[in-house]
Each structure stands twice: as C-alpha cells, then as structure tokens.
Image (tube, rainbow, N blue to C red; front, side, top):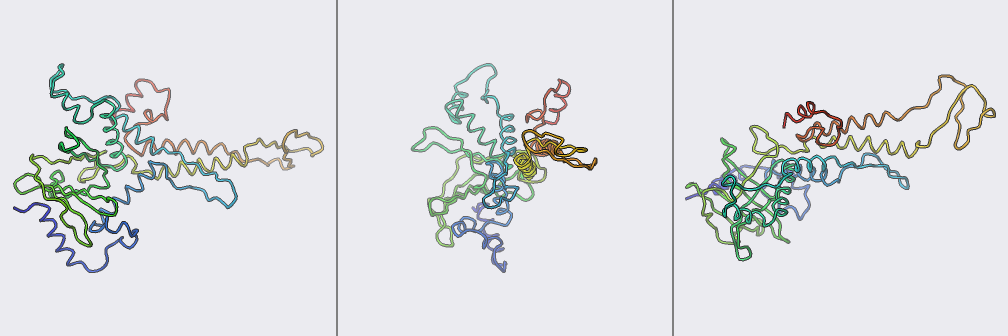
Length: 352
C-alpha cells in the first residue's frame, strides 16, 4: 500500500523531468548548504530566507542605519523592539503555569504522569512553552513532536522543533489535512531527514534517510507509528485565513529600522550639538561676555538656531507605530502607555 510520501515523490520526479533550466537560488548558496537545500521548492527557500531575516531582528543583528567614516565615531544605535514584542507576546500567552486538569478539583495519577511527560518541574514545563511561543512569534508557526520512550528516556517526551527544519506537505483541498511532515537537518557533514508520512489506511510511517551523493538512501529501517494521530503537531502564532502558515509577530519588522534610524540620528545630533549654544543679536562681541563656550552674534533679527527636539517626537511616533503594527499586543502591555484608567484599559485589550 503506497504512502502519501511515495505519491508526492512520484509527482515531484515527473515535474523535475519536465523542468528545463537551473534551479532558482542554488547558485547563490554557500557550497556547504547546497546539499541541505537540494530539492526544496522556491517557496520553501523563501520561507527559510524569511526566517533568517526575522531571527536577525529578534537577536538584534539589525542593519546599521548610518554610514561610519573611517576613524570617526559610530553613532549607530540598535533598539531591539522586535525581541521585546515577541517576548511580551510569549509572556502574555504563557505567563502563568499551565496545568492539566482531567478531573475538576482533584489531582489524579494521570495528571501527574502527564506532567512528567512534558517536564518534571514547573521550570522545565514553562521553559518548553516559552521556547514554543518564541518560535511561533518569530517564524509564525510552531511545531511540537512527541517522541516515545527509548534506551535513554523512560518516558515519552515533547520536543520543540525548529520551524526551519520542518517541511510539511498537505492536502491542497484541505489545509488541515497534513499528509507529510519532513524533518531535514545537517549532522556534521551529512544531511539527514526523517519523513513522517500518512498511509492510505490512515496510519503513519516513519522513514529515515541520508543524502548519499545526489540521492537519498535509507539509513535505518522504516517504522510504523502505532497510533492513528500524527507524532507532530503545528499551530499558527497569529491566524492567517486560507493559508497553512501563520503570521509572525515581526511581519512589519522593518519599522524597527525606522526606530533605529531616528535614534541613531538623534545620537549623532547630541554628540555634535549637545552643549548649549548661546546666541544673540543687536550688540557687538565686545559688549557681551559669553562665559563658558561660544556666543553666536548676528545683527539679523531673523536669525535663529534650529531646535532638534522635534526628533524625539518623531522617535516616539515611530516607537508607538512599531508596537501598533507588529504583534497583537496593545500599547499598554508594551510599556509605551501610562496613566490609563479602567475603561481605557478595557478598550485597549478588547481585540485580544
């Protein structure tokens, strides 16, 4: 009986045989990455490229907005609102301990066993949930895998999967009907993959393969997953109707560049003009005593110095915009509003 993976592979080979030309994007990749991205579709490669960009924003590896001349001061400022947004979203989702309750008001042996499966302590359980929430907040979709007991683990385990290593395939007529979860990763110099494929009978098989030259070869015998449900589940971070993938909290992460641009320019202005500059008109230099610093004298009554305080107003506007556009948290939860009464607080939370 054929699996859905075998059917998909036959279709892919037929498409490849009809394809003429080079594979888009491969020539731009580093040599050691060629094997890893081999056979990925352009859409899958674009997804990995997007993940790399969003993780850079989250980790603070953001573009410097000002050019720095050789030997000159670097006035660039990186204010990582992106990480703050994702972390606040994660805390808002899993801020309190999550517990199983199979029987209301009673702590059962089954509940204790469930706690042991997904973490033997509160810290372990909340760390797992935090990792899942951050993966979802950055990438838009989170994946969890259930692993059965083995020689090293006496209990089943719940594992947070890196979304960049998961390549699902689904029924084109039903996004909720996942046919295949492919996990692909690099181990030392080898490229490996595990394929969890639905069978026509409704069960699941697990294939273990390794890239040998240009072809995939079986690295371990196939396994039959003894349950009808899939060993991997996924969840959207923010809903996106009619799409398999969810939305990231950082879909508008380029707003962080605007904040950094304004902050960097403000930093440069302060470095160059932070000292108060005295000025006046209608008298000569000998008629005044500027004291410490310099006195600007001009006999034109229309003379004025530019006030740079407006940059702080622009900075506040950009900061508020990034918290409004990115993620689903209102400004009050991001710490950019204060002195809000009960009625306004309720209105600010109404869309959550």
